[in-house]
Amino acid sequence: MPQAFGKITFLAAGVCLCTLFLLIYPEGELCRLFEYALVILCFAFACGHRGEDLDGRLAMLALLCTAGADFFLVALREEQWIPGMGVFCFAQFFWALRLLRLEEGGRRIVHSLVWAFSCGTLMVVAVIVGRGADTLLLLSAVYASFLLTTVFFSWLTPGNLLFTVGMTLFLGCDLFVAVNNAALYLDMEAFPLIKTLHDIPFNMMWAFYGPSQMLLALSSAKGSR
Image 1 (cartoon, rainbow, N blue to C red):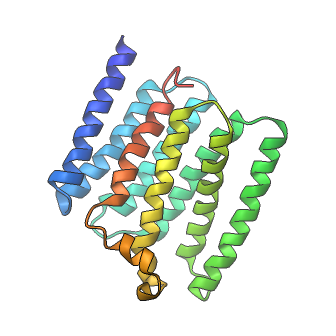
Image 2: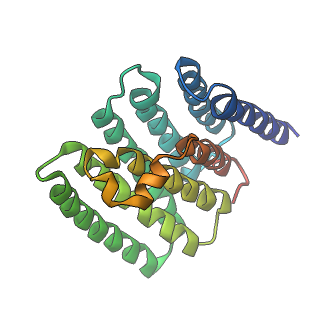
Image 3: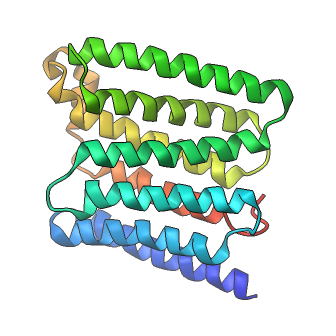
């Protein structure tokens, strides 16, 4: 009963915070405050309800790194993208390790090789798009390679549906992050679909990100698999 009560309380608090920053305070200082409060809530839930095995510890470390990254990207008045993305790479590394533990034999090796290949490919693309060694783009390439391979292989690896759906929503969030920053590197008029997504009058990033973090936190709880 205490475990179930904790989950219900967590869900209720998370939904309230999502409602506040998506619908009631969609911008400004209060919006950022409620957004970061949700990230901290997810980490706190994982600390109190995670499993005692390595799976639970990896999930807690990933959520801790997420909270650290969002400190630079959300909590601070001025976004610090390079340290934020650097810490996010560690978060995705821990999520990837968590998935690798669920995989067996050849699939684990294939997953590692696909990650290495996608990482190298995306870093080459980052250099071309940035026309040089853009640190932020290179960090984003490493981050994206972890995220893409984790989402892909999580759908092939039965074990924790909450984790799979949470990582998929995470990917949805980051697609909109990429769209919102595309104007720094691309001519938006040449890409009408990207421009259309960019101009959506709603915080699509956090519409995906908030639920993704809640599901990932729930996936760390005892008996979630």
